[in-house]
Length: 153
Image (tube, rainbow, N blue to C red):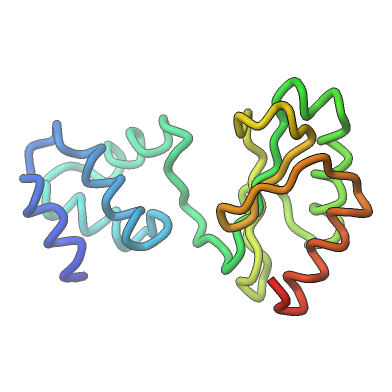
């Protein structure tokens, strides 16, 4: 058992009403919700794993795949969509060989499709590791990705 998961559950208490904050804290600590962590939470809270999965899968904030070293989020909001965000997403899917919600086999990159990043004036937009890149074209995205692959960012 992970002492950190136990510590998180104990800090909130094992009442089922505390499940969401527990899941949030475990994800903050680990970057995602692993099968082992969910099983451990179930045991510590005396709740079935299927109940925990039911709650966790209801909310899009929870991830079940370990994120990559670099997390790429491509905005698909209206302004970004109108300005070509779908082609940016296609570029990353092709160049990384993964679909949104996946991580590359080497663990370096994960890709997410997000509804809106709130940067409409910069559309189309992506965020990598918290840094916003706006007014993107496929050529700009390719240059940025190459810099990340070469360790220059």
